[in-house]
Length: 302
Image (cartoon, rainbow, N blue to C red; front, side):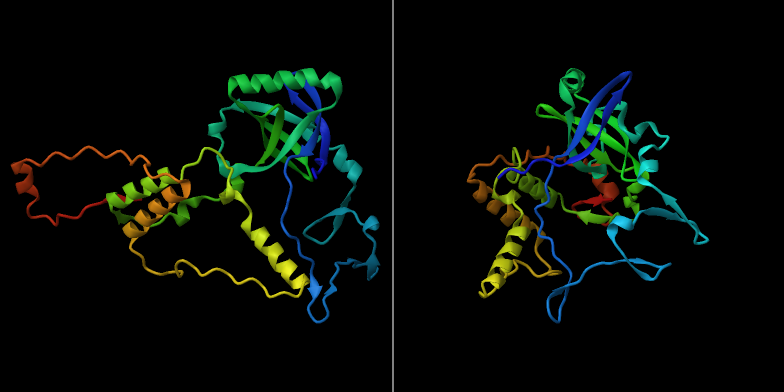
């Protein structure tokens, strides 16, 4: 049974002098298994309570609000109405600020997705004009919008017959990976070639198939059902290799290629194109390198 998308926000797309009234709808669902916190002695539910420090008593959720705590401890209350009327152009609008190729966006910055639905027949025409223009230009739109107490950067793109919005992380929200770059090591070119053959054997045209299912959630449901029916819990599969176990990298790659080809039903997958053979060194060059420590095959990786 299909679940109706949840409305997230009502506002408008603003680009240039054009304004398109839209409703933001959730484009994804969370199928994860959610647990409740319990008291392990008797399985009783453990609930969070709202406690007022001034009156030293519990209060209901309806009597709670928002407040900003200053360094000295003073709290500045901020109401929902004040948040709705912020002196900010993006408080009720998704303001388009630039158009760029989709390939220019670092996937690491892309967040959850939403659908933008035009509000009525009047909004349909400018909505469709924007959708077709994005599609023909092969561009995505960068936007600013304010939700949930902060201004955000977003990306608008065409998905089928509608416009989708993705939240984007700000540049300073992405950690610099320089600190975790591995040290230089000597690589064997044959191993790199075999890894390329594995990539070729595992290449797919889309994200359909049994490989792209949430096996963790399925296994978790199996455990929950077994406990509910007082059945024996399923046993985990034997690991194919122990963590930290030393393996022959080349042999492991070759075996992986064979398994990937078998899984696809392909027995004649094109090999990775061979690199041109290196020219034999001249006698003079050989004499210059005779005293060096040679013979090591490979390339330094950084």
